Image 1 (cartoon, rainbow, N blue to C red):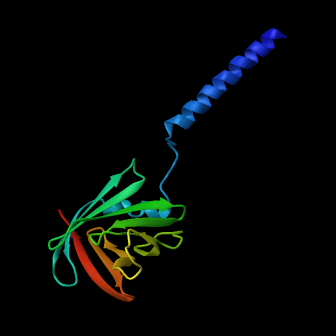
Image 2: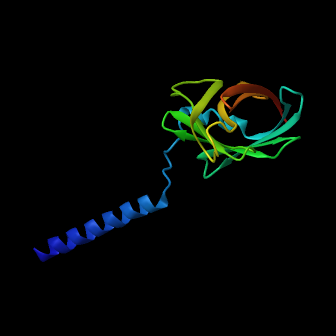
Image 3: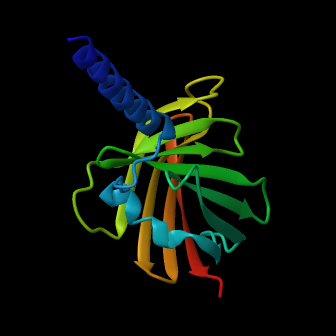
Length: 173
């Protein structure tokens, strides 16, 4: 009787150690990015383009956080660098835009259930505003024209008035 309990103790202990090890590793080799997010991975690299006023803009996409987030670094030639982080949230993609205006709009897509070249992000909330009328981004439409061409339309709202600007990019070779 004691041997059975002793054997059961070792079996239970081994199972517990295995479970803790699997949990602690934090990595599931079978995990795959959400389908919409996976479609953004080809953006990785350097891009050059212009905004609607003809101002040159550099764009760099980098995968970060063990492949769970896509970081966009935008550097217009006439203002401070901005960072936008893209990540999966179920079947949606969420972004947080760290704006040169000093606030952080958070936007998301509708559910993405299949292949698409157009990602339409709308405002969920914004942090860092001094007042609701202060200028902040409220929408981003990202269009992957082909593997070497990208268009972004950013919509900025201030004092209740929205204004959009279209950015056109070509992948740097």
